[in-house]
Length: 289
Image (tube, rainbow, N blue to C red; front, side, top):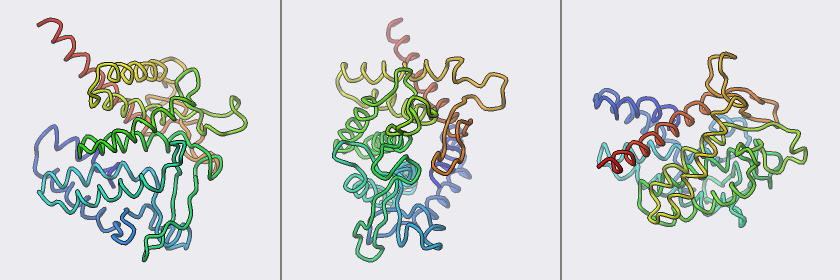
C-alpha cells in the first residue's frame, strides 16, 4: 500500500497540493491500518499467505518498513496520531525481532496473532533462512532512515547506520550487490541492482540527516560510487527495452524475476538522482554566494 500509493499519489500531492490526491492517501492509509494487529504491534504483510495457512497466523516482512511512510504522512495531514503510533510500534517490533546480532536482517517473521509471540524467522527470498538477502538489507536501511526523519528518534538513526555498515562490509567491488550475500556460487551468480538503488536513495537522505560533516561526507561518497556504477553501461538499459536499469533480481529461490529490469529499481534510482541533484544545487548556490 505504501510503496504503491505514497510513491504515486503522495508525490503528486506534494507537487500539486491538490486535495483529491490527499484524500486518496487517506483511503490508502485507512486500508493499510486494517492490517495492523495490536497484539503483535506490526502490520500484516501477506494476507493471502495467511488464508493459505502459510506464514500463519500473522506475518511481517522487512519490506513493510517502506509502508510506514504512508502512515506517517497520513498522520501529519489528518492530525490523527493513531497512524503515527501504528508506524512507531511496527518499527520498534521489527527492530526487536528482525535484526540479527550482526546487524543483518531476516526477511519474514511469523507471529502468534493473539499473544504477539514470535514463532519463526526466515528469509523467504534469500539463499537460506539465516542468510543475508541484499534487498532485505536495503529495505531495512531505507525504512529506519525514514523512521528517523519522521520521528527524530535517534535509536532509528543508530540502527540505520548499523544496517548500512553491515551492507557496505559485504558489498562487491563494483558497488552493486549480489542478490544474496551468502550465495556460495558468488561471483558466478546474479546481481540485484534494485538493492543498490534503494540503498543509494536511503544513504543520500542519511547523509543529510547526519549531524557531523565527516559522516555526511562518508555516506555521500559511498552513494556517489553506487550511482556511478548504476549509471554505467553495465547497468543502464539504453535501447534494450523501456526500463532505465538492468540486472535486478526479485526472487531467485523461486526463479522469479531473475536478472531483469524491475520497476522499483528505476523508481529509487531516479529518487536518488533527484536527491543528489538537490544537494549539489544547494552546495553550488552556497559557493556562489
